[in-house]
Image 1 (spheres, helix red, strand yellow):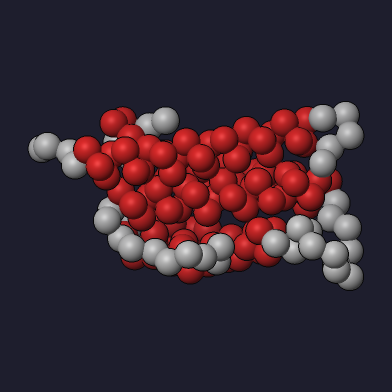
Image 2 (tube, rainbow, N blue to C red):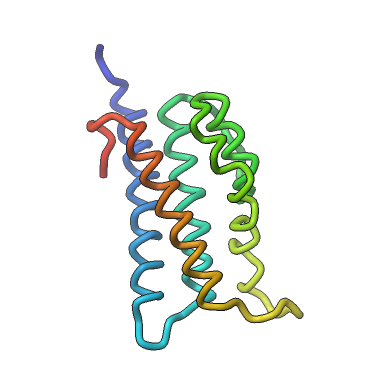
Length: 137
Protein backbone atom coordinates (compact mmCIF):
# COMPACT_ATOMS: atom_id res chain seq x y z
CA UNK A 1 0.00 0.00 0.00
CA UNK A 2 1.29 3.43 -0.98
CA UNK A 3 1.49 5.76 2.02
CA UNK A 4 0.39 9.37 1.71
CA UNK A 5 3.69 11.30 1.96
CA UNK A 6 1.98 14.35 3.48
CA UNK A 7 0.29 12.30 6.17
CA UNK A 8 3.60 10.56 6.92
CA UNK A 9 5.36 13.92 7.19
CA UNK A 10 2.67 15.52 9.36
CA UNK A 11 2.44 12.53 11.70
CA UNK A 12 6.22 12.33 12.02
CA UNK A 13 6.39 16.05 12.87
CA UNK A 14 3.76 15.68 15.62
CA UNK A 15 5.69 12.73 17.09
CA UNK A 16 8.99 14.60 16.91
CA UNK A 17 7.44 17.45 18.88
CA UNK A 18 5.95 14.99 21.35
CA UNK A 19 9.29 13.29 21.94
CA UNK A 20 11.05 16.67 22.28
CA UNK A 21 8.59 17.59 25.03
CA UNK A 22 9.14 14.23 26.68
CA UNK A 23 12.94 14.71 26.63
CA UNK A 24 12.55 18.19 28.11
CA UNK A 25 10.41 16.74 30.89
CA UNK A 26 13.05 14.11 31.67
CA UNK A 27 15.84 16.72 31.76
CA UNK A 28 13.83 19.05 33.98
CA UNK A 29 13.12 16.30 36.50
CA UNK A 30 16.66 14.89 36.51
CA UNK A 31 18.23 18.25 37.36
CA UNK A 32 19.53 18.56 40.96
CA UNK A 33 16.98 21.38 41.35
CA UNK A 34 14.06 19.98 39.32
CA UNK A 35 11.82 22.47 37.53
CA UNK A 36 8.55 20.84 38.51
CA UNK A 37 6.18 23.32 36.86
CA UNK A 38 7.90 23.14 33.48
CA UNK A 39 8.15 19.35 33.74
CA UNK A 40 4.38 19.19 34.26
CA UNK A 41 3.83 21.47 31.28
CA UNK A 42 6.03 19.33 29.03
CA UNK A 43 4.35 16.13 30.24
CA UNK A 44 1.00 17.53 29.14
CA UNK A 45 2.44 18.71 25.85
CA UNK A 46 4.05 15.35 25.10
CA UNK A 47 0.70 13.60 25.54
CA UNK A 48 -1.25 16.20 23.57
CA UNK A 49 1.13 16.02 20.62
CA UNK A 50 1.27 12.21 20.68
CA UNK A 51 -2.53 12.03 20.56
CA UNK A 52 -2.54 14.56 17.71
CA UNK A 53 0.03 12.46 15.85
CA UNK A 54 -2.20 9.39 16.19
CA UNK A 55 -5.24 11.34 15.01
CA UNK A 56 -3.28 12.84 12.12
CA UNK A 57 -2.19 9.39 11.01
CA UNK A 58 -5.81 8.24 10.99
CA UNK A 59 -6.96 11.39 9.18
CA UNK A 60 -9.17 12.30 12.14
CA UNK A 61 -9.58 16.07 12.50
CA UNK A 62 -9.09 17.71 15.86
CA UNK A 63 -9.49 21.30 16.91
CA UNK A 64 -7.13 23.62 18.66
CA UNK A 65 -7.40 22.12 22.10
CA UNK A 66 -5.34 21.14 25.11
CA UNK A 67 -8.16 18.91 26.42
CA UNK A 68 -6.55 15.51 26.77
CA UNK A 69 -9.83 13.81 27.67
CA UNK A 70 -11.34 14.93 24.40
CA UNK A 71 -8.27 13.87 22.41
CA UNK A 72 -8.05 10.50 24.18
CA UNK A 73 -11.74 9.82 23.46
CA UNK A 74 -11.12 10.52 19.78
CA UNK A 75 -8.16 8.14 19.83
CA UNK A 76 -10.21 5.48 21.65
CA UNK A 77 -12.84 5.60 18.90
CA UNK A 78 -10.09 4.49 16.51
CA UNK A 79 -8.31 2.12 18.88
CA UNK A 80 -10.17 1.04 22.05
CA UNK A 81 -6.83 0.34 23.77
CA UNK A 82 -6.65 4.08 24.49
CA UNK A 83 -9.60 3.73 26.87
CA UNK A 84 -7.13 2.62 29.52
CA UNK A 85 -6.00 6.26 29.82
CA UNK A 86 -9.50 7.75 30.09
CA UNK A 87 -9.63 7.96 33.87
CA UNK A 88 -6.09 9.22 34.34
CA UNK A 89 -5.40 11.60 31.51
CA UNK A 90 -7.73 14.45 32.42
CA UNK A 91 -5.60 15.58 35.33
CA UNK A 92 -2.74 16.36 32.95
CA UNK A 93 -4.85 18.76 30.89
CA UNK A 94 -4.59 21.57 33.43
CA UNK A 95 -0.78 21.49 33.26
CA UNK A 96 -0.99 23.20 29.88
CA UNK A 97 -1.81 26.45 31.67
CA UNK A 98 -2.31 26.21 35.44
CA UNK A 99 1.28 27.00 36.42
CA UNK A 100 1.98 29.31 33.48
CA UNK A 101 0.17 32.28 35.10
CA UNK A 102 -0.08 33.72 38.60
CA UNK A 103 -2.78 31.99 40.65
CA UNK A 104 -3.74 30.66 44.06
CA UNK A 105 -3.08 27.07 42.99
CA UNK A 106 -0.71 25.34 45.44
CA UNK A 107 2.80 24.65 44.22
CA UNK A 108 3.06 21.24 42.58
CA UNK A 109 5.13 18.49 44.14
CA UNK A 110 7.91 16.38 42.71
CA UNK A 111 5.64 13.35 43.20
CA UNK A 112 2.95 14.97 41.00
CA UNK A 113 5.54 15.69 38.33
CA UNK A 114 6.96 12.17 38.48
CA UNK A 115 3.47 10.65 38.17
CA UNK A 116 2.65 12.93 35.24
CA UNK A 117 5.94 12.05 33.56
CA UNK A 118 5.25 8.32 33.96
CA UNK A 119 1.78 8.67 32.48
CA UNK A 120 3.15 10.77 29.62
CA UNK A 121 5.74 8.09 28.88
CA UNK A 122 3.01 5.42 28.79
CA UNK A 123 0.90 7.42 26.35
CA UNK A 124 3.79 8.36 24.06
CA UNK A 125 4.95 4.74 23.94
CA UNK A 126 1.38 3.53 23.30
CA UNK A 127 1.05 5.90 20.37
CA UNK A 128 4.47 4.98 18.97
CA UNK A 129 3.53 1.29 19.15
CA UNK A 130 0.47 1.99 17.00
CA UNK A 131 2.19 3.97 14.27
CA UNK A 132 4.03 2.44 11.34
CA UNK A 133 7.82 2.60 11.12
CA UNK A 134 7.59 5.16 8.33
CA UNK A 135 6.36 7.84 10.75
CA UNK A 136 8.66 7.05 13.67
CA UNK A 137 10.78 10.07 14.57
